[in-house]
Amino acid sequence: MIGSAETHYDVAILGGGLAGLTLARQLLLKHPSLQIAVLEKRRFPVAETAHKVGESTVEIGAHYFGEQLQLKKHLTDQQLPKFGLRFFFKDAWQSLAEGTEVGGSEFFAAPSYQVDRGRLENHLTETGKELGARVIDGARVRQIQLDSSENGQRDTQHHVVYAQDGQEHALRARWLVDASGRASFLKRKLQLEEDLNHDINAVWFRLDASIQVDTWCEDPHWQSLTGKVPRRWLSTNHLMGEGYWVWLIPLATGSTSVGIVADPRIHPLQKLNRMDKVMAWLEEHEPQCAESIAHQQDKLQDFLAIKKMSRGSRQVFSVDRWGLVGEAAAFLDPFYSPGSDFIAIGNTMVGKLIEEDLAGRSITQLAPTLQSVFLTLFQNNLLTYRDQYPLFGNPRIMALKFVWDYAVYWGFPALLYFQEKLTDVGFIQSLAGGIEEIREMNQKMQQFFRAWYAVDPHVHASSAFVDQNEVEIMTRLNAELQEPLEDAALQARFRDNVDLLRDLMLEITQRVQQRQPQLTAEVSTQGAPAHRLDHVFEALNI
Image 1: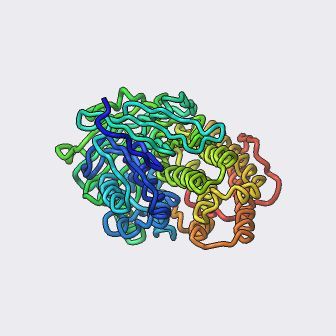
Image 2 (image 1 turned 90 degrees about the horizontal axis):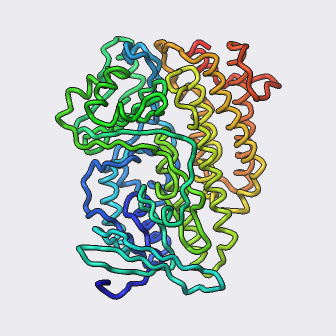
Image 3 (image 1 turned 30 degrees about the vertical axis):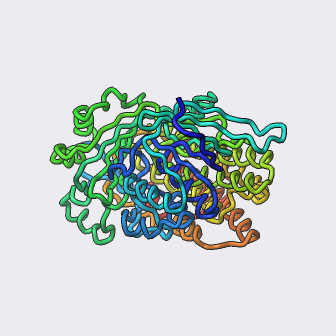
């Protein structure tokens, strides 16, 4: 029985997590008169140190939160600055000082943050209400009926039934956006799930303690680097090994988030799905980490294991005025922290569709076009991860792969996002040739890294520090993100970045093949390579 009369909204958002709450804020900042409902099964305020992936942001997501959503004061005052992504390679018996470290010695120009999800979502809830959103917490979706906009019906409404406090309620909305995370109401209803052929599992937990890698070694050389690399603990620290990586993320509450992501072909989930198993596994593979955590086990706050973490969708936007955002749409992999990026991209695109529709303009062509752009970005990024986990313990391959992957990210999607061009269909189409070339180069380079691993799989990490701030193309591409450009200048910058990636591909493949002449790959070796990566090659003794 429905407990009250139906309420009508412009937009109903299923899910009051990070994706749903940021979408509500995004829409209301630009269009304060919109009637928006957010349905969330939890009760607010939620506990801080919320048990969710998405604490580590990189540049697109950080720019979306800080600038597009005007949350920079909250991020600066209530969250932690992020000292980039940092990677450690070593054998189990080695200390961090005896292994290879890859990361920056300074903060990159474009900021990023370590985010306590509970704290941020509580802030978004309160400020969302102030902006005019109706946040309906303790609400469980029972039924969804989608209405079609075919035949020129512009007054059709989607219908949602939800339960709250033991009673059923209903609402209607012109737009319905699923931000329900792994529940994925619409994806399940419409049978849109797509297998990404990228099978990874994850376990993660929080400790009410500060776990700082800076304190793990007393080696004089390691300690001397502290002056050059202050506060490593503010990085998203990655402990790398064949088939796995371990994350260490500090939170502003004083807690530390610890996660293990692994290829089940090498590290099955049944060896990691309880805390006692995690400790045994860490003692075998990352004993320094195990020792640090062992002293804090009485401060364990939560524990969760998830199988098949990556998820895809055949469709994310519809001309029938619905969309999927966040994990309800698709999720790649926690490595490189892309989750908040695809929240930003998806929200920006569905926001554009909502604005165009409510302004009375047709989205018949726009919806499938933006979906194509979204899925192209997603699939190109997927190449970065698929069948790459065996490589994760090889510092030589990974240090160069990091440069390549960062350059693709900063030189293409991040550049266009910062310039607010990912929803400018005409502009995107003007770059079609370059985008396709980047996709082809990325595909070839990811295959090259796998081929390199096949001929040189096991490299013992030597004591080395690969300072990414000394790689000029990395500092430049990152700094250029914040430079405003007119269309013609942006097109020229993009063409320059395509050329840069082509040169980078040539330099990596030629110099590696000089060392590994048995390595053959489907990559052009014509031309003289530049010397942009001398610092990396020297540090890795390549």
